[in-house]
Image 1 (cartoon, one colour):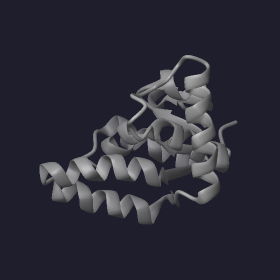
Image 2: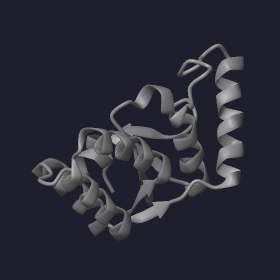
Image 3: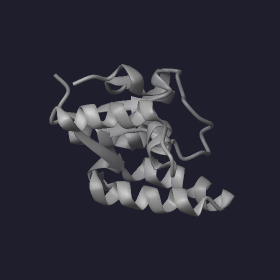
Length: 143
């Protein structure tokens, strides 16, 4: 049974659209209706918000703010960042880096947030995240 779902940038962006598609609305409503906690992780908010600001999508920014208030917001904490640093180093030591070494690796921060919350990650990119946490394509997560 799924108890908590952390939204990656893809599903979060779909929900933050001013006119979200019926499939993502039905999916999120079904989870919430079944008692699953949907969470907006701070790192996904950052990734999505920076692009919305860049492209001037003010209605989506307002919807993102509404989602942050309506769902459970997961802020980045010091323990989360310490765990993310461990995951980042582990990826390199095992020969499987997810990004260039000079880049901030948002995937490991998201994975660390999921570990801290005891949540699975709803994503559109299962590959990188599934090395660290349970990550599933959002369309296949059911209560």
